[in-house]
Amino acid sequence: MKSKKIEGIVPVMITPFGDDGKIDYESLERLIEWYIAHGSDALFAVCQSSEMLFLSLEERAALGKFVVEKTAGRIPVVASGHVSDDPHGQLEELRVAAETGADGIVLVSNHLDPKNKGTETFMGNLKWLLGQLPKDIPLGMYECPAPYRRLLTDDELKFCADSGRFVLLKDVSCDLETIKRRVALTKGTPLAILNANAAIAWDAMKAGSRGFNGVNTNFHPDLYKWLYASSSGHPEFAKELANFLVLAALSEAFGYPVLAKMYHQRIGTFKTTKSRTITFDVRERFWALDAILDKVAEGTEMMRAKIAAL
Image (cartoon, rainbow, N blue to C red):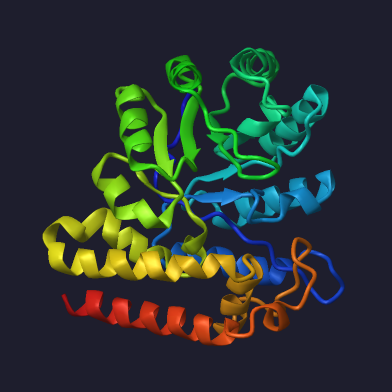
């Protein structure tokens, strides 16, 4: 199995919708170019941030194919769309993801153990899927928080790593010691541990997490890229930047992914902020939302200017 490395800064892609409620592919193409221009090393398409639970199978297929086509091999793309609990439904979804031409397909851990029964159920479903899926397609595992956060045990992770078929784990343990242990468990294997928690992003990188895969890559992937690739030469500024990124990430609680869509509407990437996940008026629910977004945007530009001056 030949595979590209899925590591570094890997944005979880958001999906633009038009006023008609359909996927806005014109805005999506601008978003892809924005990700690439701002230092992204790979893209994670058709994920929770993409609102995959609210997309039909046909939409998930079209979305994944479009991202693969428009990246044109410039950076790797992985895709999920794994939303079913029924094993046969999962197999269909993952085969559809593979047919997009993505460089890897990503399984969601909680759907392999939907009632949280434990390792026996998880491993039984995983082994069955592995026997059905094409063996030449690299795989990833995503500890998606919805419908519940199902973290891998050490034995489950070791099985995935030792199989040679997995190239990434999107880690949502939000725990630095867990990440350190996982890095050690997967040493010497193709499986990269990608932390998704901004609060420990820099510490996780220093501990061996091979990049960052969190939601704030939709605001400033380039800042995470600098922290990952260049922080060792400027430790004092790295602390300042890491602190800013922690504070900026607190904005996620204020209506993500609509908040990220508001940002991209501001900078001209998106036409609308429409979402299928959030249908209420986020400005009405969160009265200080625009002020929060102002601070995130201002801080992002300030940090970019400081990096340019180094």
